[in-house]
Image (cartoon, rainbow, N blue to C red; front, side, top):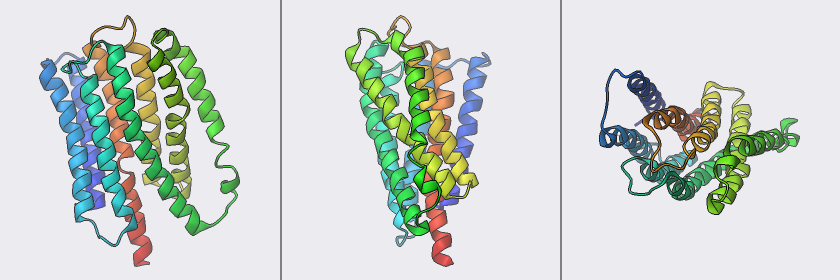
Length: 262
């Protein structure tokens, strides 16, 4: 598989996923829980297998090739988290689902952030110090402020008394979900505001936003499982973010290939 093939495939999956969710929300069809969540897991499995295929078939001289494997492993952890959060999982109620899922997603997203950091580091080494270098960490401040305010306004009221989820989600929100968009902004800048940089950046914002929607809606009343509508709203944002952010190794490999050929 070529890196460009993964990018095209992920966009096709994104469009297919959004189309399906809106079709179901509109009531044109009805799926059983097993089929509905099975399709979600199949979409995630397709991303994982495609990343593994990209790693195995890419030019072995590319330094960035290994990131496709890292992303495949990270996406696997998030897919397990998707199963835990699904209506077919035995983990209940929603607060318990999100507690275990937070651990699994935390592992996956931490790996995403490490890859984002390393790719940016390689680019910064090649380009040397620039005017942007002195400001790059300052970008974290408005992201942190938005995350903390959003957490207190939309999440905190729903998780009072759930200590692990309470403190865990706050730390998650103030660290992993600050670094992810921060490093994506760096990548967007380092790639000279390229299309690839923009798509990765959008993915890095959609994933945290999907969790804001999830925590603000699923936990109301702490039911055994959320309603189908709440699953669908979250999935549209979440899978769109996954499909876009997991393009990162592909864009990095294509950029390295061009540099090598030049």
